Length: 340
Ligand SMILES: Cc1cc2nc3c(=O)[nH]c(=O)nc-3n(C[C@H](O)[C@H](O)[C@H](O)COP(=O)(O)O)c2cc1C
Figure 1 (cartoon, protein in one colour):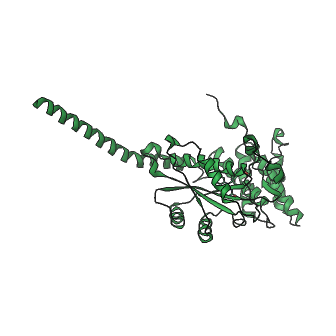
Figure 2 (cartoon, rainbow, N blue to C red; figure 1 turned 90 degrees about the vertical axis):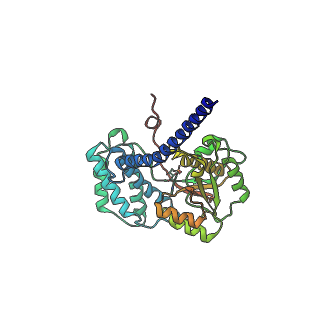
Figure 3 (cartoon, helix red, strand yellow; figure 1 turned 30 degrees about the horizontal axis):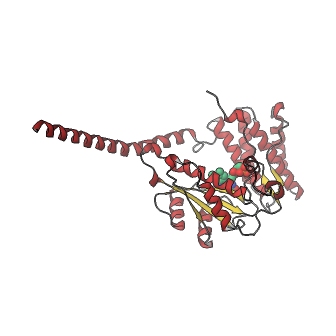
């Protein structure tokens, strides 16, 4: 009898010790894993040097030229806009040409710069120095890439995008673009609700469904939040609806799930975008890449909980019959897929 109660006590202590050990280990694991992530990010991202590796330099180039092609797709691009970005981009291309060989995305960057020069030429603005530097770069493009035409902007008709009836999924994927020109027509709340209903079907880790959609109806709140989002000046008032997608850390535990809110949130947001597009509503994802102070301000403005994780904003609006969008040239399958 005595032996039995001793064994029970020992086994309870063992369980208790095991639980305490796991608790201490997890609590240490969270900061250590974040430190590890921070170290990887500092070491390999373009944060401290945008030209650290070929990939960071390529990403810098894509980011710069995308800013220009997006600028060209705006409702009313200003003559000579973005000269700082243009100069940075050309310097980055010159650096790339010196270190490596100009590649596919460098050629796309040159095409975008050509569109930029032509756009300004039509308005009577000439750039002699820029043209000289571009010509020198063009000469360094490998012969196999000379014919690449991607980049810049295209004009598209809404009748080519939105088919009557229920469009097939392939059509929805093929015709979705980030739109930056909208009409003032309202988007029916029933459409938004249906899109959210469809997005609820998104997969999430263990089906915990951490994502929430906040429709920014109040103009003061919307403006406050858009002020934090510094990337869409010039058209922020156009889309009728602005959706804030958030996730929450409250649904996850242990260090290994530290990025799960972003993954589940991203998947949900993508489905939401497709669901809106399939119903004839144009969209544009808007980043919420904020620092700590920005996140705090966002949480305050939107009345979010401390545990909420901002994923992105989605601008949603009705489209004019004709629209201009950035081409946003994509990588090829062999660059993206690896068999091992
Ligand atoms: C998370 C995320 C954030 C984005 N942020 C912005 C943004 O702040 N401003 C903007 O004009 N476009 C933004 N975009 C749109 C991208 O520029 C666009 O998706 C990309 O160039 C591909 O073009 P497409 O959407 O027309 O196919 C964002 C897209 C994503 C997925």
